[in-house]
Amino acid sequence: MLWPIVALIVGSVAVALFLRWYYQAPSQPGNTPNAKLVAMFNDRLDAALARLTPAHAAGLSPQAAQSARAFLSGVAEVTQHCRYQPHVTVHNRVVFDLTLNDGSVARDLYSGGQRCPSADVPGVPILRVRMAGGKATEITSDGSERQALPAAVVPVLDLLIKHLIGHDQGLRPTAYFKATTSPTDLEKAWASPADPKATGPTSTASGTTRPSPPSQ
Image 1 (cartoon, rainbow, N blue to C red):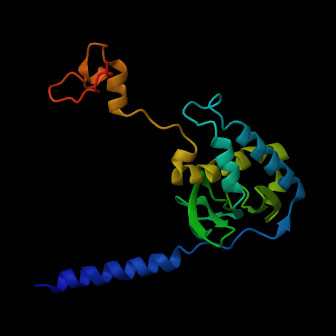
Image 2: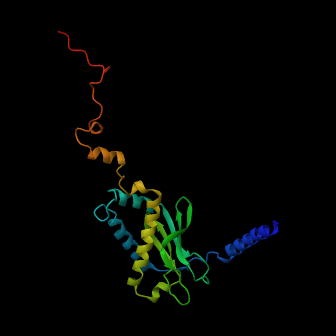
Image 3: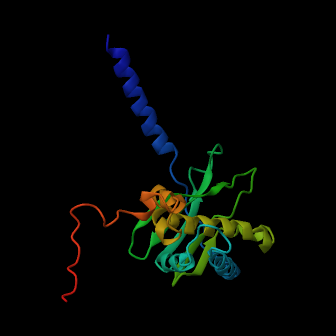
């Protein structure tokens, strides 16, 4: 009989639709501006860019910081929010939406697995960072960050900046990292001088055309 299978499919679809309705994204951050956060964000951003060098991280290319600046200059807004509604406390992590100057939006990007604030756990401040020219120009929130000293918010900003730049690194790895050595290049580098693979084909093979000697 097929009715149990049909009932199972219908039930699964109903559950999926219910969860989609139940787990809607919460409201966006508050509209309370914080000028000090803007200065802090830009300071931490400069520090992060200064570390994008081969001297600080092996594998980075010399133009990594320049690539990051070019990417950041195209960012219009970074908005943190909880993945699910506030009443969902299990696996409810902070994610961020990225809006570029061209109007394109990337949603629900990973921001380090930070827990969303709830009644029993303060969590992290939920921020909206508006940017222009690669710098923050305005940051708004619900004001919860003022319940702690500014130093307590620095790790939150560092993590957001890390994953903001990391998003572009994932999309354009060649703009940030040195090219990896291919197996063929490694084989050539370790070949002995007598290895034909290292010296390449010779010009003494039969049928090779030689230049005509100069006329006497």
